[in-house]
Length: 136
Image (cartoon, rainbow, N blue to C red):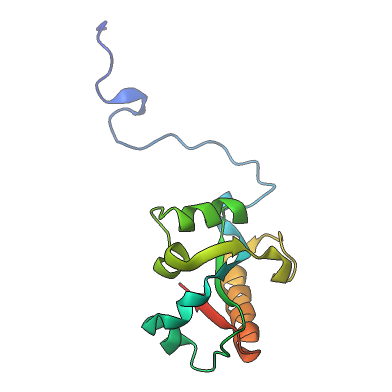
């Protein structure tokens, strides 16, 4: 036995981390997502891609970024406006405020597939009322 540290770490050199046992009570965090809504600066109406996605936009009404994430809405908002790794261009450039007051069942966590459908439904409902909405 050598006194030298293992150059491959404690995992035997296969590069993989050991898995922690699951409690079985909850799905992993990355499988639970919540919906969030960001209010955008009115100047977003000048962005050609935003206008193309919102042909029935009523000028004067607020515009929004609609998303879903495993992060808390406050964390995701900060990531967008600071230009984090997964920030949307529209949310980074025009994001102004978190608007959880407009999200039905705000704070509810759901499986990824359900969250994606709920996000699309919220965006559709807002667009039908004349609001501009961006989804990544």
